[in-house]
Amino acid sequence: MALTTSGSAVTFSGVTIAAVFTFSFTNQRETIDVSEIGIVSKSFIAGSTTATANLEIFYDQGNASHLTLEAFIASGTAASLVITSATAQTYTASAILTSFEITGSAGDVIRASCSFQITGAVTIA
Amino acid sequence: MSLESSVRDMLVAGSTISLVPDARVTLGFRLQDSVLPAITYEVRETQLETIGASPSRSATVEIRAIDETPLSVIAIAAQIRTACASGTYGGYVFSAVIDQGHALDAPAVGEGDEMQPAESVTTILIYYTE
Image (cartoon, rainbow over all chains, first blue to last red; front, side):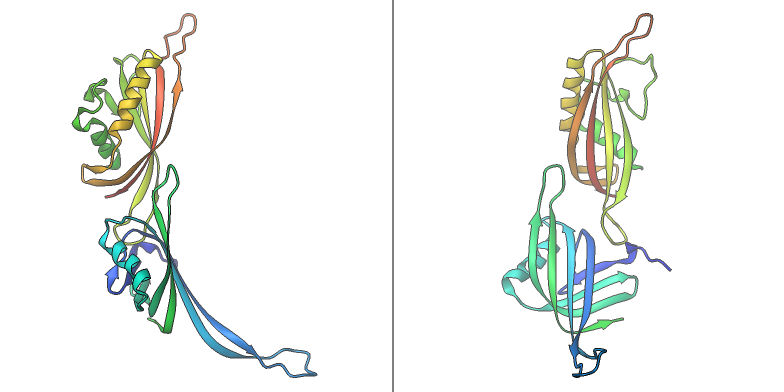
């Protein structure tokens, strides 16, 4: 069944981020090459996992949630990131805001792109 | 309320458009023999812009200033651009109203035909929430 974003939301440090128009969450597992000499087929074992997340918002410095989010660039502290992809379907992890990029162009609204590095385990529930 | 009626509320708010009486600001069309000057407008398309239960949307709106001479419609179009401003209209919150340009159509007349009046079409992009 396809789901819409009508039930979606993003919170960081307990604050719901306003005016989100795109979110993404990437969870990757590295692999370790354990191939042996003389064996044609390569072999791998599972390595560490790493996760990142991104959001894009219609930026408004007058919006308290945007100000709160942007302040995490200066503080560098990790906080709880919860991405609700659809109603009751969440990705929860501790995250560090690694970039906050604002863009504007003539004939368009101001936008901001935010990147997060996940630290520790991700809870998918 | 509807987006269309909110756009009309924006156009008539505060009598910014003094060159055209409010009664001549109409959605979609005007009768061919109705009094000029007049303004018609139409919502070309709307799009969903943000996530969540109360999403932001955008709408492209075309607003036509119609009168007998090009200079007159240019003056009306200038007032239209001033009237197109962010605010709350009929319960709709217009968070950003962006002027995307305008085009002028000169009046045309053919032998034996009724004169086609001059028109200036202003295109705006509105970001709004219901």
